[in-house]
Length: 109
Image 1 (cartoon, helix red, strand yellow):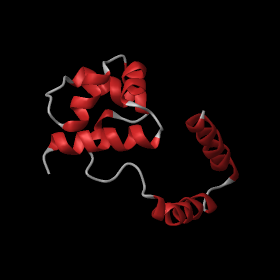
Image 2 (tube, helix red, strand yellow):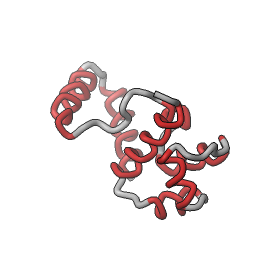
Image 3 (cartoon, one colour):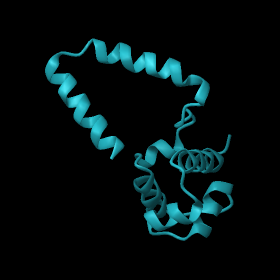
Image 4 (cartoon, helix red, strand yellow):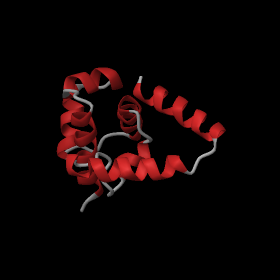
């Protein structure tokens, strides 16, 4: 799969998972909704600066947008994902649990 298509699919999946329209994401990122559309359709060679803005607006690292691993878990994977998180958290000591609690609150704000 071409890197442009991976990038476009990841932007679209993340945008939809966050319940954003192309216009809303464009506003958050400080770019046009037309650029978001072109990015999602992989028909534009956009600048790295624009990609960085879009990644920041989606709350991910710019490199994540190029990942071939799905960034948004399909709904069917929810139970498996919860179990994976639970098994990781159960191994933490009290101080680490406090850090995880803070990180979760910050991530969900």
